[in-house]
Image 1 (tube, rainbow, N blue to C red):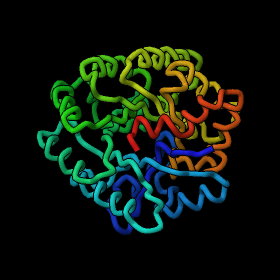
Image 2: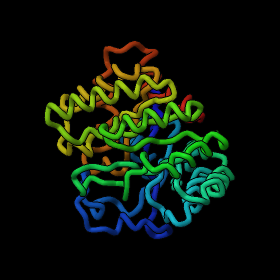
Image 3: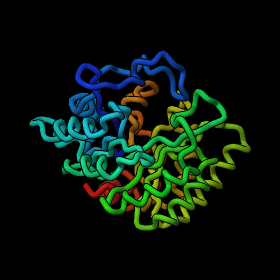
Length: 298
């Protein structure tokens, strides 16, 4: 089975500025101080080879590299992809852009100077638990933010959507208003609240989002919500996502190195393999490989 890792991060604190990695904090998934100080193509190659995985392509998603100069991250990542021995990782780059910025068009233009740029991401997560907040305010209801969003179409960029299920209805209206922009839901909409009412609310919300024809989903990062996860504990969330979006609109990913706090690389991919063992060959090929290739145009 060929694999495309549709969501991972590369960083190197010795050559770049990642303020969040220097924090002493307890976020939803843990403490940034517990993460490696460097994660580059060679570490991903080693993880795949150790697990006997045929990792053919990858997609890097923004990870807080000097957000005052967002083009620096894209330059760094394109440099990694172009290095001999990197195997082209990352084939797709999804850098940061502040959609509300008056300089958004200039920022998007800078990102698109690099051939592997495919989309952008701005963290939108807002939760009643302040330690689970990834955004400093609720962007989805901000008129300037929503008005600027249409610039993504001009540059043919997708938007990686990182938020909680209770924010999905605001997203649906945004997706309808920007029907020619592809929305890629991150980490199964982070099902962090695990009481039965919240799980049912999450399930209903992802089904509503799936009705948007310009929305697809990544199944990844489930360890952030369940640090002692097992195949059986994540199985319902994986299957609910596939039931909502269909196998043709879902893709698997690792969320490494964040999810390296909860398992090794092989364990993540083996779990997806076990959960989908009874799926058709065409559905499995899509989930592990072809859908990421299609939606990230890599």
